[in-house]
Length: 151
Image (tube, rainbow, N blue to C red; front, top):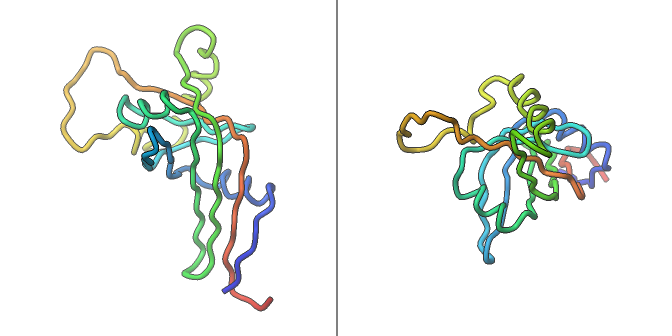
């Protein structure tokens, strides 16, 4: 098996083809990683979540990293790291248009609210949904690929 670095164009292709990533955030030197559904457009990833630990941590430290993988066999894979900055989108005011754009992109995917909207324990019914849309403004992308072959 050989490993090669991916170009920015190849990284973009991997991120465009997928819709689930692992989001890493950090607070007070402690890492936290969770799966998220995303939509990729321009230089931005749009995500959805309910309030909770990841939102609290990203509000405290907006520097995040996402890992997106593509597997095409046991020894053939691509893995991309997306480094960026968390930006919460409000449904009113300055971010309203981008909030609606994020919602429209995400809702086109089946089960788009998973895993960000599900919790391990039953949740009570509330009058208004506390859901949160956010973007990750991409600062950098790197990737590697594994494949069979000779050097």
